[in-house]
Amino acid sequence: MTDTTTHLVLNSGDKLPQLGLGLWKTPSNVCAEVVYNAIKNGYRLLDAACDYGNEDKTGEGIKRALDEGIVQREDLFVASKLWNTFHRPEHVKLACLKSMADLGVDYLDLYLIHFPIAQPFVPIDKMYPPEWVNFDDTINGGVPKMLIDDGVTYQQTYQAMEALVREGLVRNIGFCNVGTTTIRQVLSYATIRPAVLQVEMHPYLTQEKLLRMARENQIQVMAFSNFGSASYVEIGMAKEEESILSLPVVQEIATAHGKTPAQILLRFAVQRGTVAIPKSSQVERLIENISVFDFNLSPAEM
Image (cartoon, rainbow, N blue to C red):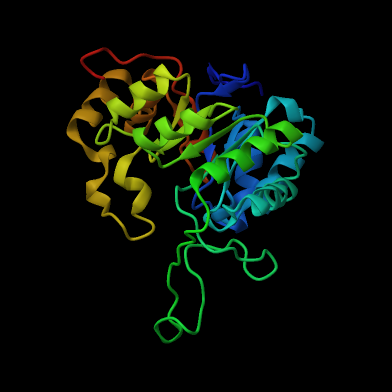
């Protein structure tokens, strides 16, 4: 099946699909099958990360799709993210190569700094993914604690990311979970401009100022948690009833268009000119999520 999404053009000239598969919280035991089914049903953007703990399984799904001739490597847009414990310049390439090996690719279309937080290095053979905590028996009587590495700057990390582009390992770079101040700082020293900003965006968190600044600087925006708090129910950070999917106005618009509430929220994201990256393990839902390019929301509905 061919790519069923529209695209945004990056400042490198590469084309970024406007709807992709988010792999956060996708269980490892089903991840390979989910990725394969997504590609089979028209997905071309895969949003992965070291921290998701499933890049090896994502790679298995990619390999199956390639082996069956469903796509060629150049048809896919594969994104990954640099984790906090690899922020020191000497560790950035190590982290990138590990993600590439797990994903089974010889280059990444996009590599993002996951958080503007540097943590002490954790060797890959000791713990991978390293997660948010460092286990140190001298701290809090052995209780896991998040440690910060204040010996590296964001500028040093970003410049190490630029080196990946020069080496041909990565085609585009960018960042996640940052605001206008950090973007302004990066633009002041970047020799390879950031191509993508990935942040949480949905009708309860529209981030108009941030979106406008990104556009003014030719940075495309990937919006995650497209359904708002629904993304956090699984990890105990929100309640089911807080979901935007259950809002009467969303349900009314869905009824008017003969679409589901999820499709309305995804259409909201792509119609704003951002990229949506929903996740699902069900084939029917994967197809539903990508079927948002055959209708428009009115200005009032937006």
